[in-house]
Image 1 (spheres, one colour):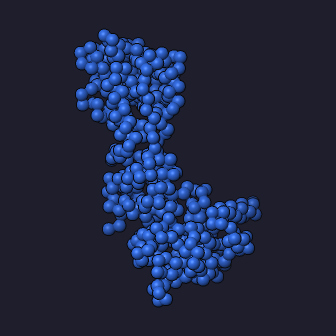
Image 2 (tube, rainbow, N blue to C red):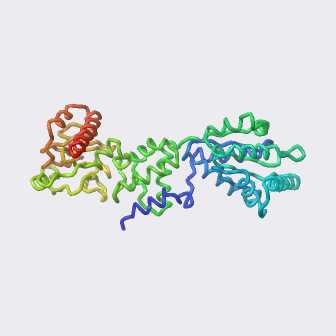
Image 3 (tube, helix red, strand yellow):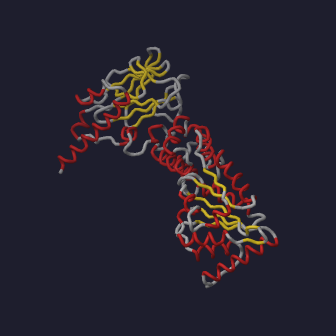
Length: 415
């Protein structure tokens, strides 16, 4: 039974994905150990920082869950949080009901609670996420709470998470209590290439996929890490977008390019044929042979065609030297483009190994012991013909630029 990639993608990388599973990686694990150690220290305060999407919220929520079994813990999101809201949320999570008390009354209730807990049991914990987005008045309140002490012990243990600007905030002149507590700091690190692959596959498996390694091949994992810089939140975003672009097929490197990038332009922005032109032009096709024997033909019906050994490919080439998803063919009105998808053994056209190239009539694509002969390739204009003399990378970039210039000229003519 074929998996519904779109549904699996939403489960694995959508807005509620973190509720399904938490994938731990080295920096995630180290951050948890660091924060636990900071809370056990004499000053009981730790800072966690990293850019948006680095996993701070996931880590601090997990820490709160671990502590909640034997410690009074309050977890609050600092974004646009005012002092009154901070105090009421703290009291609610510490098990105290509030009504219409003033800010001063709420502060007294919080202070009485944390001082009593510190005297009789252990200091409660307050975890504030996105502390860099708090109102200045709420930061000043945090500074007041940080000064609470009982018998030489700080009465409120603190974990603050935010981006690097948080360090400047807590060391500013108005935050003397934080400075006196001498907070320790941990900076999150991105996922490595190997961790990225494990992360993507584990999320898909947790969502119910049995083909995670097929959906996200190694080269795609590397490309997604490059796009996201290895930060989990951004990785979720790019992985979900790539699945949506794959149109129900395993994700290829082509699908990982955002609109406006070269490969995405190649795979998606296909000019529409005029009526007369569409009638007169035969669709491109491939003649597939092995050892001189014709095995079949493939006629283009879509703008993107995947070639490989997998059953998910449009053109299946049953050859041990062919990767599961080996190459992509991208059809334009003025060019047929071949992209090798980081295959294990490479792709050759007319006995020359290529990564990207424009195909012409009678070109021979070699994949292992199989040959794919190109017929009815789009006619290449003089400007595109000039690009054939360029190196592959320059050729593809110039082809995109040329297409954009044509689109602008068409728009101006319409106006």
